[in-house]
Length: 290
Image (cartoon, rainbow, N blue to C red):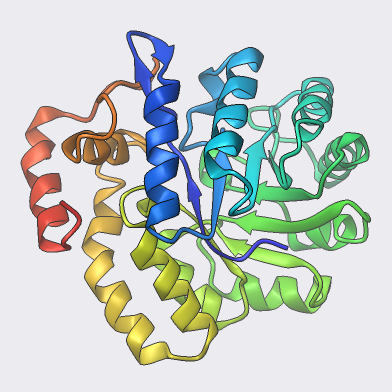
């Protein structure tokens, strides 16, 4: 159902509050630049520090600014099954195209615990559900056998996979079938994973390079691998720069450099170190992104 480059949107803040006008401006620019989809309230959107009310405000603002022109996904996962179920029920009822459920973090559930967690949330959702495998943040991967079992649930449509493994695409496609969506969660691997059959990428760098990421995925999926490779080579230094410090610190700094948002995060995150600003600016300028 979802394909192409889907931006994992930052959540702009100003004075400690969510800056909805800045978010709407960012979404508008994303649309003008040719993005294929939007994710509100993901890890890049600092969802773990948003209140439930703020999540609903962010999702509503993104949906309104997108105006139905591209699919909107919303992150509703937490490390509590009861909270995840309730949040999924409420936000899926707002009319989003899909919800994204992160692996429960900190708890480190077993295979069976993950299956039951995701099943209960999927049962509560009014829209398709995508799993989110990001062991670098959660401390626990979703095993391929777990994904394969969950893929049989009628409301679980796919996975955003950020395990850093190219071969996972082939493995998941074999186990889960052609109807199961596979979205890359790793910008550096997005081209290779798209060439192997992933439908697209949920991207950090597309906050500042939406058009380029959309083109790269389309080229890779269309078999134009040399053109995709050249575009990836141009973007790769900027992709790497997005992780000079913890995401979304660098990408928020980059958007601040573009004059689009305030360079403000919510504790425990703080703005990227000033001594890294020169390096970041140089990389972005070299890539034509500033």
